[in-house]
Amino acid sequence: MENKYKAGDIVQAKVNPTLNLLVRRYVARIYYCQIQEDLTHKELVYFERELIPPGKKDIGKLLSKTQ
Image 1: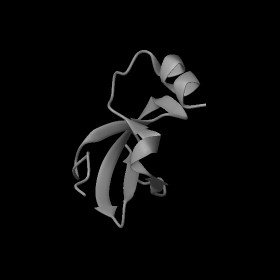
Image 2: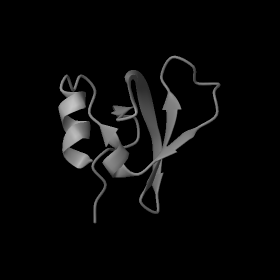
Image 3: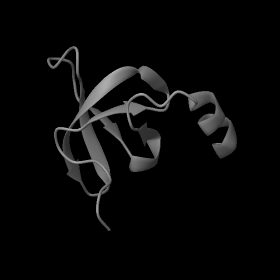
Image 4: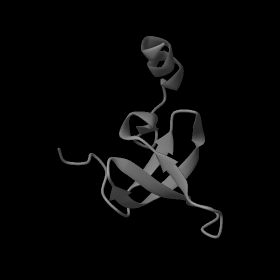
């Protein structure tokens, strides 16, 4: 299975859609991301289902459908 996002892509997490994340690498179905505004911060890790493309406006609707 191929990953949806590539290294260098900007994404957002469903839990905090105001924070832009930079995909650094994808290994074993896990995305390793850095905060775009603070590249010195520790890496954050996410599964693909936890990420959304930037600019998704209806995040509340997306979250309510998954719960």
